[in-house]
Image (cartoon, rainbow, N blue to C red):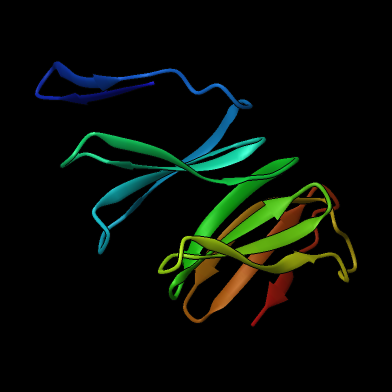
Length: 123
């Protein structure tokens, strides 16, 4: 993985756990968040700091919601607190379909998608 600015590589490293599935930028933290199938990482361009924040299994997608990151998995979803940098509780599995493939925040709701092509909403 590389961080490039003005055609110059400013940082480069390898991710050792899982395949990258999604990258998002968090404006207020001024950091990139990288989700692999097995971990959640953060990268700060201002300090070139790259840190594993959470280990897991079968991660599929994520989005920011208030001061949390909602992580979809092959078996439900997990919440991660941005302030404490810790997982909140256990993975939520009491859903009509637990195999989540998409997580999107729209307004004040988090929407989950799956291969069943049915949308699920969580408040």
